[in-house]
Length: 459
Image (cartoon, rainbow, N blue to C red):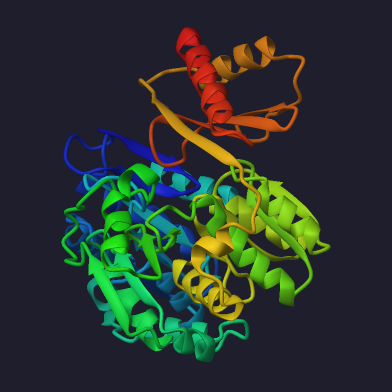
């Protein structure tokens, strides 16, 4: 059981003791702290709340909405929806902020409060620290009965989100419609089952097969869209002779594709392909986090732009994108950020741009993948016990490899000529992530295994 407080929100498992899990008492405490912080930010009183399809979602949402009302804040309740839809609705409604109830790629026993500012973006580390101060003090000021906030249910938020995507200049609805794509979607028993088909229909895609389409939160497989979890999708793309497969995570901010032959396009290459398309039309810079493939840098330089890396975490990517005026950015986990739509990872705009590019190139998805350099990333993790001094572990490893360039901005990243490895604690799970990249798959795996051995020896 776990409760994690980070730039990715307040995240924990359901069930167990308060303070150790995302218990009802903790939900009230952290929602109250966020509401108190919002009231220091200005006179706006509206908060947008939405949730993914998790089993605990309805329970958590009831507590969150009631707590906000008890603080005198009005709630716009989107019900079942996507993370990017909540983010955009904060902008549409000129709200004070928003809360998305989702643990993203985590298994079904997890849930989280992902906290947004008035721009519909994740709150900064500094603002997050202030929220945690309110939570620690528990100096909450609830209103009297005559000043309770009201809750309004909104049912057209996804429609407005999709309409904004259709109006985006680089989304070519006519080209997509004319290609008559045949698509298989893995919706992982969450809100992608409604959001993605609605988008595809609006783009003129008529042949859609939905796998795991019942929105019940009982995930048919591990919800993180990694190769080992997408075997069903790969098989069904082949069986249906589809043009491509699409996989999203439970809150629809991560995206990956399957080629027409049932092989994976590679989640790292989702951002690479979309950036390639955008950079052909808009010259400029790109950003991804330092755990992402170097292929984005290659594509950016090819188009005359400059590439920048950030620490892992959507808010860090967004901050760096603003600093360097990036035209496209995101994360190698399939997160696409299109800044002139909104500064948030959004699988729906990612799908629309990718299909536009694929339709205009007249290539198959496999042929498109063949136009990009082949890098291989080995993604691994080691679970942590409470009280482990991760910094001490990283210091030992850095000392062991002192002759190699090191970056300690976010954990520890080591460079080995053309290869690299990145070690960092997760913002969302009690683990160390170990990502290694090379031109050769076996080399990437060997680097990762060596680092995991070093970590275990240090533990």
